[in-house]
Image (cartoon, rainbow, N blue to C red; front, top):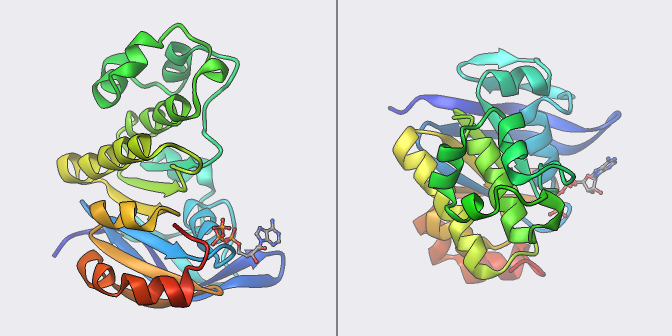
Length: 231
Ligand code: ATP
């Protein structure tokens, strides 16, 4: 059996005293890409923030690398957690090369993931396109050789070709280095192409889980019932 890298056990979480995520059980094993899908406001980002250590559970707990943890996000990041958000975690005023240097990522590793970053090395990140910024953002996260990657809508607002590139890089990290990936993705059909398993969230609860193949087989019904407005 594969090693579980990150898990939520009976997790309820939210903002202040208000739980917006309730009694969630999920896990991500080494080498797996797991998609967390659901309509807007279902609680996907809140779940990721709690797994990352940015929000404190109201009930239940998070396990990271085999142990229950209450460590803050920066500690989890030092122990092998990578987190990429739609907000593009790059420093806009610095060059692409300096963004990599600051993240302690060797340029060659980043250029191996996304060759176009080499040509952009001297460009200020803020002047790069949205897709280029997100490649840089993902290169910064994957280049640090994380054990777990949490990716929150990393393809929001980007062209389909770029979305494919980003998702393929995520899949490769799982296949080649055994990274466990939890992916929140609005492009559900694209996400299902690279995911092994799926959790579907509705109003803060996991209402369905299965293999990507199983979910693909029911996608029309799932979209009609749960994902209106999601691509
Ligand atoms: P989306 O796809 O729109 O990002 P989501 O599934 O990621 O949605 P969350 O962002 O986790 O959903 O939000 C879950 C619920 O928590 C929503 O009802 C939202 O309004 C609420 N919420 C989000 N952020 C906060 C906050 N900072 N304070 C209070 N409530 C919040």
